[in-house]
Length: 240
Length: 227
Image 1: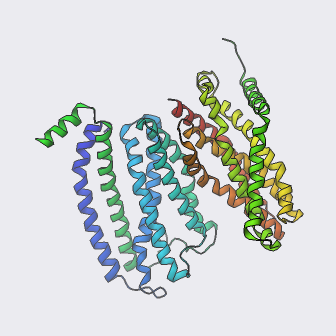
Image 2: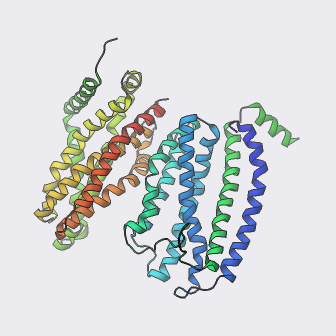
Image 3: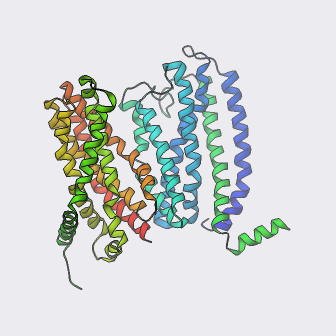
């Protein structure tokens, strides 16, 4: 698995599966969420933005944790593929964080009457965006990409303290943002007909991340190994 | 090879950094001057409303302290990186994290302590009630070393870069936020007269946590920057 060449081919085979299952769950989730799920008794139809907002927020944290775990692996075992995973995930994570912030802002305007409040959840999510941007800019500032990958591994690990802060912010500080409605154990706070599309969208976003991160990682592998024989043979094969 | 105990290596390094700073006394004043200037800008900017100034006072002092800490961070490893001293550290028989801790401590004594001394004066100027000043000092004495410790990781990661300054602030400022939140919250709570032991405990916990973990991360980052 550590060999970039092997990874390149396996990833190429995996991408279509991720992409197709992403599209299927996306269509099912969007249809179920927009047409089948009942309107909320308090928020009416506007709660449906949740089907983008909540999965995006989940992904913003999930991707960061993936990066931190990949960071530990790259620092300890110096595996090239995990190093590539970190930087390939960073911009996807930043996009999901931005999406969560924007959709939250659009949702906040009709519900709270403000685009933005300095609530603990919003502030910590904004910090997460800055952490992602910091990782991206540090990576691009260091010339030697292997050194850069190790540097951002450390940074990802240091920043991981923010994840529990985001996750528990709604419980620790009782501010405007509502507490979590989805639990793994215990009674759900929303009816099953609302929950199913949310979970579908959650799975769909994860599959999207899988497909995109593999594409980005493949491109990164090619760029790093551009002077090796297998890449040259690959490119020459494509030209013929 | 002469055997130098870890404790004497630590104190020697600390002494060396303090002497070096003392030789360039003019630079010592810069962070404090910056701190005072930034703080003085706020009342000029928001107007001469005593109540408003009092309300924003603790926050202004902490934001200015944070910026001053950030401004002086870059000097922590810069000259040692330029003249190759850091590479000698890497070759030393002692754990780098302990040597790094000596440098962070020296850096805090040079840049953090002066802020701490100047703070009560600025607090008076910003109408912070005198009852709340001990709490402000307590948050500063717990918070500014945490800033130096967290910042050292960022400096170590960016020391090899030609234009590391902007990236450094992007890396470090988000990590400074928890300290800022709890410190200003403590001061504001103490102005109202409510006990602040919860916030103080969290600040102390953050100091202890970063004291244990930051030197390790800084040492690892320096190894990467020098590779």
